[in-house]
Length: 154
Length: 193
Image 1 (tube, each protein chain N blue to C red):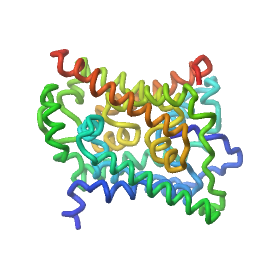
Image 2 (cartoon, rainbow over the protein chains, first blue to last red):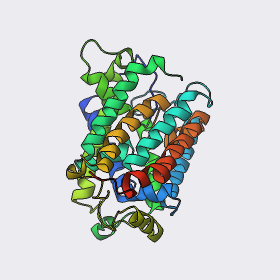
Image 3 (cartoon, one colour):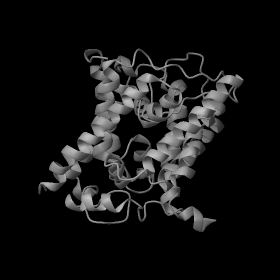
Image 4 (tube, rainbow over the protein chains, first blue to last red):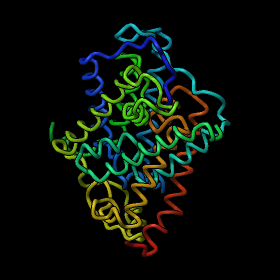
């Protein structure tokens, strides 16, 4: 997920809205779990190019997300709460160090865990509690980045 | 119906629906799909008054929705595993089973190999490195790279962002390196704790 640029006029979500976000998250977790995207074995299969499953999953997700984004932008639709729908461009140029270096480091984590952040939360909820260790380590990694950010090339 | 839902769902059912999370979040509250940001918001929420600049922002306005979203992921995980039979027999290819057997991983059900992931395996090389080093790299890399699979591979690519394509190539470079060079050392070399 990308760093969100500050929108100072953001309203604090209401309790009901938070329930709505949680419900969307729950639906997403069902999709991750039932498509086996949460499986270490599936990630291994993907990195060994031995099945189309994960590529089909990611590719078709990008396709529906892309078509919806296109339609939303063209129609000028607004969100339910009246806010304008916009996705800010990723900052800087594709050649920036942060994208390949940060991306590769993330990939090392993905390969070792066989799970990225969404599946980590889903696995913990599903009772595979040892992945809590990975979540805490990921929090530590995030915090560490915040500490050394200004000394890293970006 | 339950019978159908209890089977693993094919990619062509789950994939398009996963992509729809992007417009659903936008239409619901103009929020951009991304999960690793929740880790940043948790750091911001957990820091005291003297927080590093990176975490010094109004995490409630920026990130409370995101924390509710990931709480939903935990609940959805419980539902999927508890009611809908997730985490059972996996349908990976025979070729992958055979590769994994060479690394000492038996054919089994469940979402992760018991030889590596389990509280009783945490102090082995394979288990500890996978969870702790893997988690650190995941969290650090996601913020340095500005996103994870949801923010870059799904939202970023769908929004045709070149930086996201570079990041996703990085994800694969890192994952391929671990799979083909690190795991054989970690699992196959008789390294055990």
